[in-house]
Length: 226
Ligand code: TYD
Image (cartoon, rainbow, N blue to C red):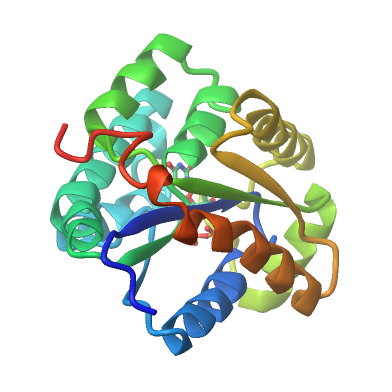
């Protein structure tokens, strides 16, 4: 069955929770079922946003402060939404995005200590109505996630701008992501990422299937042409 109405699904969580592995597994399953699937990520996903990605992850913007970084994440997001996500969803694709606005709420807002109003204003402008139909929050104790992230890039590799922060900061992010699933239960669903890879994949598919079937979900939670 091919869906005529697109969907926007985001994946969130701390470092090393397995988002990209699971996104690719889900994309495979959905494509085999005949869906048009677009896999993308943040920061990045469009030409303009990929140009900003390096500035953010290399730490080049760190010395200019968290506000500057937050604005750069928002600039990248705006380009990504308008150039890639909105057009794909409008054409009927299922867009699977590795991180989105909730990462800014957590990394820049909660652990960056930015004023909530500033973060909300940036979000409103960057997202411009393109609120995800579903956000899957993959949850793992921070220490386990960091261990996985390190194993993935190799023990000698340098951690990126955000990975290098203290364990307590990563734990605070984990709590902030968990809070999201409590404060926005209609959009954000918790997935226990400490299970086996197959079990996580099954839990994700079970969460996604109703969203694909539910015509009422599409477009009701957002104004895509905002
Ligand atoms: P990336 O290498 O894509 O890794 P990950 O597998 O962790 O997603 O790194 C993205 C980093 O940028 C990650 O540490 C989270 C951070 N980030 C923010 O701080 N704010 C944001 O809005 C986004 C999208 C990412």
